[in-house]
Image (tube, rainbow, N blue to C red; front, side, top):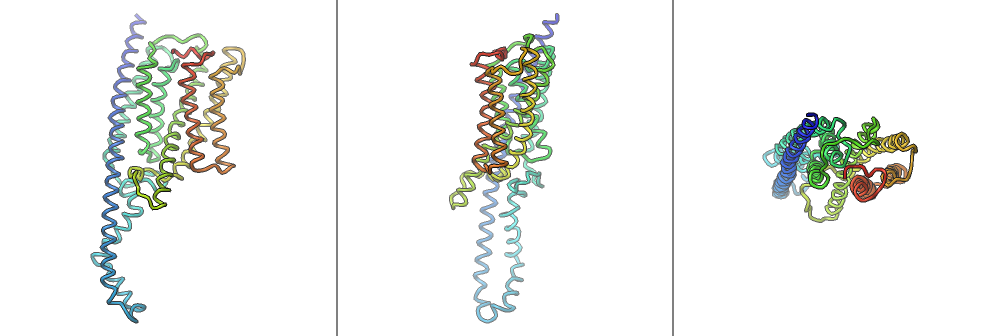
Length: 372
């Protein structure tokens, strides 16, 4: 009877995961639609601003003969400036707002670096966030039913780690959205969550079951929960660092007089703002990863009688710690900013992905009980 209940809860969990993946897919499309639509709108605003500026310049040029002579240095100039307050002048002031700060705030752009919500109302973005919230609720139901079916915390194997990790990544993204307008990260975060859910269902599916004795410890809750949370934060900084590289290249191209071929990147803050926020989040995640390493060592002593044994999983956990420690140290004391800092952050996240995929799947060791 109990086995039947556990199996039923496991089936419900799989159904919820499928529904969550479908909802996330629609949210992903909505986020992509927001980028495309907002980029098109910004281009239209720029064209209108250029047209109005050209009209204002033509009007000024037409009035220049009136002020030629001695009056140019006197009151004629003042009368000419006053005349600009007419139809052409009234159009010029909104133009300056549109081409400057207005394109950043009024058109939905957060490139001023504050990443605060402006007065804009981007319907696709709001729909995407609403769908993400719905998907996260369904996803949470899948994680909870998996836990109820297994009778334990749902992160005892790769399937459970991927599904729970995807949920935590989305949840952290939604929590950060409360204070910062990071909707430009939606396609990256939700896309990664979809990949994790699909990989969990296709490549790493594991039926509901009990844990091996080494995992039957309260340290599982402490150690893995902190690791998942830190990994979710590293996911955000990875997306920011990747966008930083693209934005930096775009800014250099525009500064050199080249054409802006990545219009949607105008919805993304400038490279420096991305780097600063990524650095702060990486610092928080690094503290969490430090505790992951420490608590893992304590758990190893409880389970195997030693704090450190150079197991492959232990080594790569330490490698990740070293990479992010190097990133924080290099940026804070050695002046490694810009693209070099972004690449270090990306390398750190690639090590995280390698640790939880390749190491678990292809390297033998004491951590090979991950359900593969």
